Image 1 (spheres, rainbow, N blue to C red):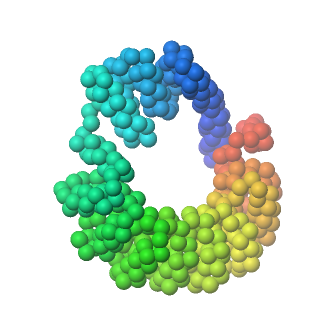
Image 2: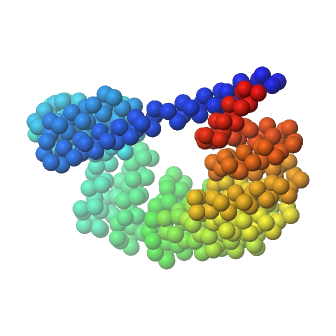
Image 3: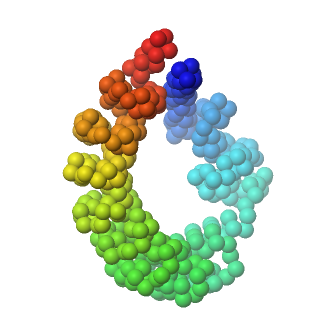
Length: 400
């Protein structure tokens, strides 16, 4: 058993060593090379820029999509258009989900207008996406006409979702009415969820009222969840807190509290943590953790005699803490560890300290712990923390 433990520790130590090895340096070198290319490009030194971007493509293991784009851009600048198109085609083929894809396809269209050379394969959907984006330049009512017809047509879900997004960006009462109609499911369920999400982008009182009404009238959990998620964009904190307070479905309560955390609704979450039934407080704590509200979590943790709430508070601290609160969190968790008689609570504290990367407190607990099981868990947590003290501990154990 001891030999197995030693091998596990050694493996963990080696993993830490490799994880902190050459990858960071390579990333730093790649960033320097990328900046050199940008500087050369901005100053009109195209050959130097091309050399930097080409080296980045050949030698770096990540973010080659942006280097391919700027390589193509530079090649186009110096008249090597067919080579530029080949770089763009490589970007699209090797990085199909790249955020640089739209820029690549726009540059491809620009180049083909002059060169007529090699092409990136643009699908019909790609061209329609460009056409939808171009509706920003069309008079609003005309744009609404086109979007309404488009949504009624036989197009892919991806295209219709984009059309809904464009509709939400159109400053028109009629556009809002179409979204409301779709969100209510009056034109069938096909686009209802997407329309709800788009309606959340229309930041006005009427849209919020529509969403609240839809939530209250619906019996479909997924529709209700879509309404909850749509409130992030419109920042409807008070409205969402009210929905959560009145909701009976535990899953929807949890979804609402998590969303409030994403929205940073700390005041609403603190109030809900005080007033919700006991079984829903852990979800409120998770929301507070997502929002980074350390002080409130500590107050609840210190004042609780309920193990499920205490462990939920510890989990929330693990995701909430930042450098400003690290010492306060460490002190609170260390005090709780010493005073608690619950193995479950102690194990959760060890996990939280590992997530917080707090090797100092973990090391203190490890050295003082008498329970073999908890001591082993403390050691396991320590092997995930890269520090000189951890390395010394591992070395001393291996030599012992």
